[in-house]
Length: 175
Image 1 (cartoon, rainbow, N blue to C red):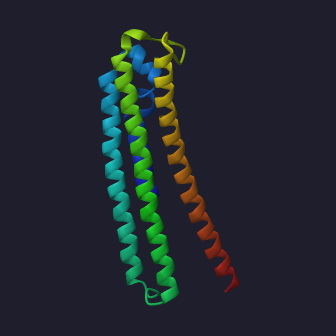
Image 2 (tube, rainbow, N blue to C red):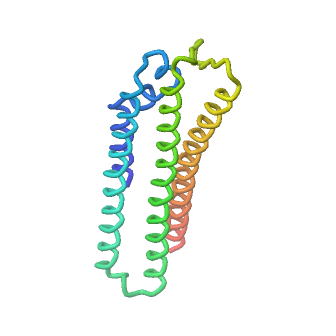
Image 3 (spheres, rainbow, N blue to C red):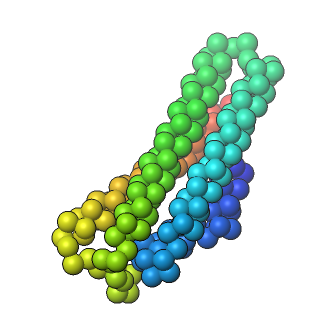
């Protein structure tokens, strides 16, 4: 699973995802189509990462089934719970990323449709019309919320796994 995330993050870095989708850069460089293409590539890479993640969870489940402990009801119940949690995590993560990508596409389309009305000062996009400011801020808010959701999901999963490792270490020390 860690390797899947590493590969996905490396792919985002390789395509310069975060720089290519910065709203100020999109407006100043007028690279609306490029930015939309980068979002498409990031979503394609996500689909591959989620498929790899699904495969890793499936392989883990197969390995557990072959384990000498698989016949123990408590062990099996715990492993089934962990597997269900991993599938839930993968689904939730995919949905959070998709919400972010959707909002990014909408922002890019909005900026393109209103390109004559936008200018950039530093990192700030300037519109004269308050309705356009509100629309851009709303879309940026959705992107930030989705990005925070991704981070929270990863942090929650990491904390859950760390807690399980700590519990296992303590149980080993007792025995």
